[in-house]
Image 1 (tube, rainbow, N blue to C red):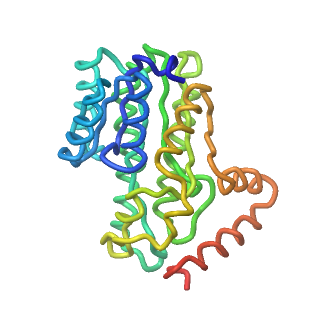
Image 2: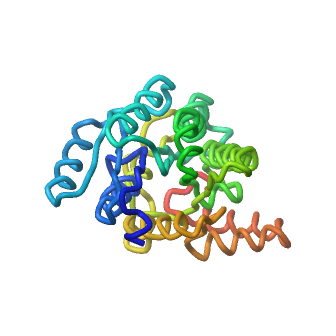
Image 3: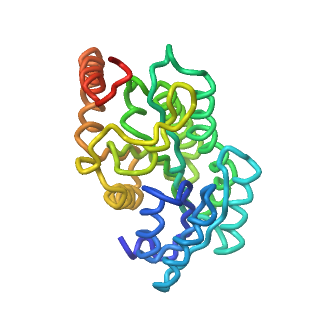
Length: 272
């Protein structure tokens, strides 16, 4: 794995915490040249200093992926600093937890802006460089991007949109050597759930799930790295994702019932 990632230029969005931070640290340790982005510049600076202290190569750029011009600037920084882009990982994301009939539509617009348009904006300006390097584009999706997750309408919709966009980018670049992968972690112990939006657009502030039973960001980062090296199309990481992907082909109504049963039993479930 280290040989594969040695000197690869990797742009990671949403890198100030959680899965993005874990990716930045692990891939830099593998010898990659990592460019981190997020809105929280102080956090990026802290992480970059820690990575650099071990002799690994890293750069950072404050960037709101919703803003097209900032995404273009991010790719310019990567090219100016390291000479190109080999891998783009669209990890910046936002979640939600509310029933659709109780939800302000601004919440769904916000989810689409960050999760879908953030991926589109970054891909637009990284793609010419990835075509040149015959590299990879990775979208960090979710089990909610495989089947609709009750209480997460905007989240599921945005992840479905991301998948459709990336699938099309793959087909359009079939003869150009570009690898495109959608990665679907299970529930992961990261800040995305604490910042999940409620029905009125405020952050929920705490997660209803047991963190100890979730995947760690470091586990996700390692599995994604293996998927990139193997140039996989779809990277499913836990039984929820693999089971959903398989069962939906043959028993879609059963998957509806299973998802409902799981989510209705979640502490403080909006379905109750």
